[in-house]
Image (cartoon, rainbow, N blue to C red; front, side, top):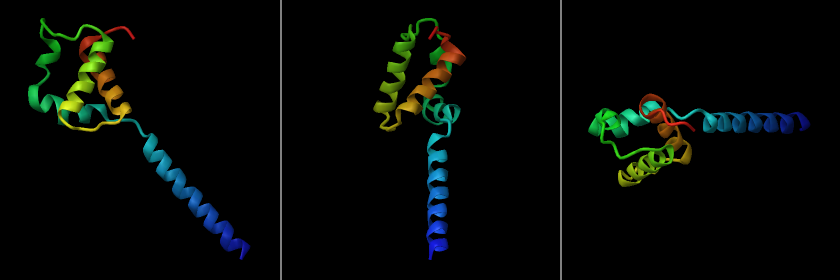
Length: 95
């Protein structure tokens, strides 16, 4: 009886650990960017001279606005990941 209870407890712990690990995995920002951003307008909007985004805060706001306008319902870490990727690859604002 005790062995069965210990086995059940161990199994529950393993399942919880697996779910927690999946939830904490890094956001795949390049995939999100490709599927939801550059598939519509390409990367030229990030490199044009007259771009409207001129700060990291403005970039974050733009990513959030696009996410909401497209009805994507991203989590905050997804918005942060795409913002960081765009900043690293195109904008180069100081954090």
